[in-house]
Length: 160
Figure 1 (cartoon, rainbow, N blue to C red):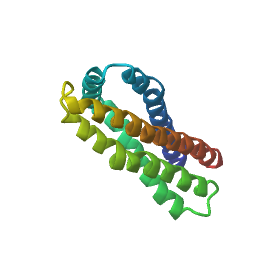
Figure 2 (figure 1 turned 180 degrees about the horizontal axis):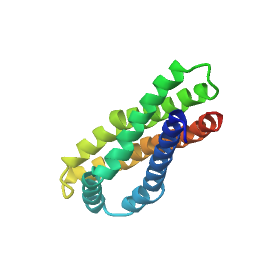
Figure 3 (figure 1 turned 90 degrees about the vertical axis):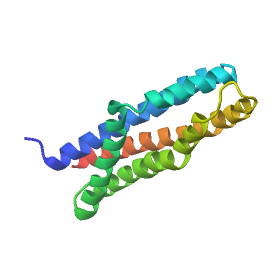
Figure 4 (figure 1 turned 45 degrees about the vertical axis):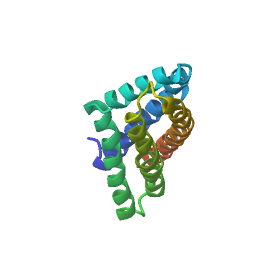
């Protein structure tokens, strides 16, 4: 029978890995593809994507991983003397700060600003150029953080 600590670390690690993959796919393909479109097309496509991504599967993985990371922070502090607890704490914080907090502070506000832009407007081109540059940069940060969290949590899992 699997230990509950091990199961929680495993689920958390898998969630971070899934999110690292989502962020990676956006950075290397979706945003790259959208950047090749005229501004009006890119804006319209990203507006549709931002609506479509808010689906139950994505939200369960994204917020569920954050919930499991929060539980791992508590578990790591409560069991600090147990092997792997420092890695568990660091890995969980990497996701919470580097993925969840970055999303809330940088990506979501840009998504909200883009949502109200008329793709065919004259202002759309300037908004789109800024969005592509900054949203993608912060998405890279989220991806690296989720990947680093995954790697760190693997060490915690191996020690559990």
